[in-house]
Length: 360
Ligand code: KG4
Ligand code: ZN
Image (tube, rainbow, N blue to C red; front, side, top):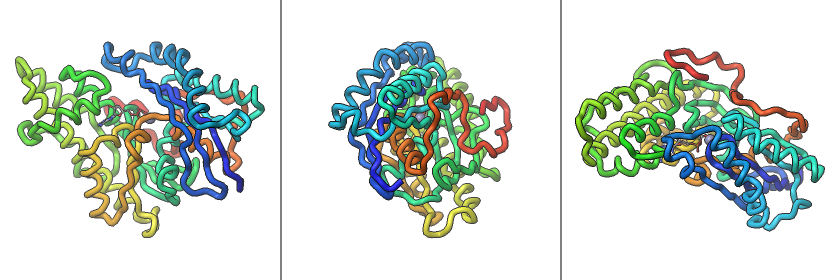
């Protein structure tokens, strides 16, 4: 489709209610974010130490209309300026997904606009093309509260999974470690903050899967080791907490680098020399220490290292609008009766992950 596309994107799959307007230029290239309105529900979930699905769905209902109005106003767009409406159709907390999906379908039907059902993970996966005009293929480390995966991104809708977690997602591990130490929710930014003052070598922690073949991840053993460490002490001083946070973050960095290094080696047949780029996406990509660590690994393997700006790493509407624009440019729109999906793997061909507490 060789014309510019202006798309409204809606994201409601977890604890961020978000709406954004993004423009994809005619013929492709990097996109333009005309607006990006995000309402974080952190305060509503903080007392529970994690996302409560019913509270999330209710908050999406309360805030979504206002956010869409704000996104349209900030972008200076009228309904007539839009070429399509995109919404996250999964994977995620089903109550929230339904809120965004039904709203998007309602607008699409009322305005006679095409509708695009977006896989939330594809939103994260394609963000680097919105900001950096990246050609396919590239290697992607997707690290969020719900997912830890290594994928070769071969094209829109075309993913080859090299590895995934066999138990917890890395963001989930950050959140649990933070909860153990009473640091509040979400855990990632809190752990990163106190780790700055910490000594990463005082407490030895395991590096699950490191040194093993393959690209799968495991974080539950690391989380358990932190729990035993924390519960084994009568009280935790601020210094203890900082040292534990630093040790945990360092262990995560070692594990992620080890897995990425195996993936870069494995991808050498799949990614031609001029395309060797490691992209990190998802909320955990906001972590500066992990970014630095992964950049060193990428460069050691002759890979360029790319991370989207902070506010595009965590959940947002721009990534959904952009994935919608990429799909629509290929003529991929969806029927209005498309249903929500709690699970929706990017690579349906990938063998199911195996392990102790496997979830996906
Ligand atoms: O991508 P995202 O916003 O939502 C999901 O799709 O899951 O990721 C949220 C996750 C949370 O687990 C949060 O603790 C983690 O990303 N996170 C971080 C940081 N900022 C957010 N983890 C480590 N360091 C950070 N600075
Ligand atoms: Zn996400």
